[in-house]
Image (tube, rainbow, N blue to C red; front, side, top):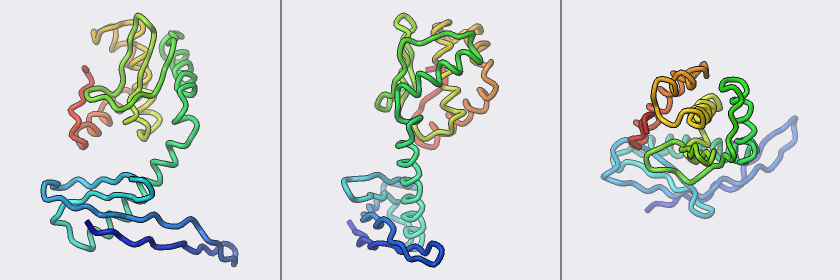
Length: 196
């Protein structure tokens, strides 16, 4: 398993002054013959592990390592954003969306949960609780809003019948968000469908 040596500190020039930036992380590239197209990356301690197909060339590897480092950094920055990490922020957003689209229905709690195998989110109408998969932490805000509206609608209508979808479609970007989530599920091979 090749390890890319740390690149050391980078220097940035700001208005004629040289400033040391944060050091580049150490990168470990893991290739797999079973991996066909998908490239992914994650942190393992202080190392970023980049998973690549074995057939990829060195120039493609260089491109994808840089791309995945950039994506990982953006993802981690979003996760640190208070609106993306706090259950209280989710609850506050639900209240805003409910007032705007669903006649003010209120959940008793809304929280992030570890990724679910077959769902983006779930709701227990009898308890008024909503759980949102951490897989949605990095989606655009309008997609997360759709998922919240979807689950809020379940507080009024438990099933996926006509009355339920009439409530959900009060959110103007619902069709677009459904398409986004279907594409995300297909690209990641998750098999998550809207009817779950």
